[in-house]
Image (cartoon, rainbow, N blue to C red; front, side, top):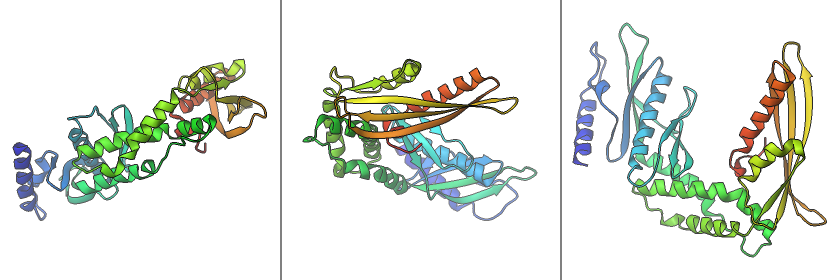
Length: 308
């Protein structure tokens, strides 16, 4: 801790002494990423200011990840796109988007005889805390429907299980950044209620033989109590198109959650659509199948209750 504090102090001194343009590279250019009491700082170089800033933000995200190492299992994934300021932390098996909305470039240096640019970026720690807190607000308002019938409880489980698991990980991350999380105490209790109820709930997937690969992929993610409280029914429409040197297959997969008993009430329905492409009709069909499997392998709340 004393070493980190000394590094931060030296970094601040170097920063204060490096103002103004100069033919010589500024001293801050050689500084490693560092965190002061209130801010994260990072230096990076790129082919443009945008790319250099993105690389510097990746260094800041890594600092945040390091802060979480003491009590969480984490790794950092950089988002694609040179102007994207969003990253993904893996905390306790959950993917947590981490976004920097107001990162400030406080120094920049154009390298001589080179198109490369170096930047020094500052991100306030409070900005990171505020982002994490914002992710917790919705989950903190959720209330498991204890008095509802099993189908309604099951719908709630499918819709919010991913949200609550992610929120619990966000809460842990926020706690590791020395922030009081007592205001979000209900998140863990609601997750416990959900997981307990899930043990007694079941969904049966109803699908034709040709849809069994997709049905099996879905079934692996569903509560599987012996008695089905809901049916998840799959139906598919397929269209083919030949554009000369290539083939396309358009698939529309209709997914509906219904009561397993007459009058077979539909509780929820949606449609996933993909367009497979290939040099043959078989390749196009395989490509469409792969796209559907990728969509269906996401958490339920990411596809079943959202638009295509």
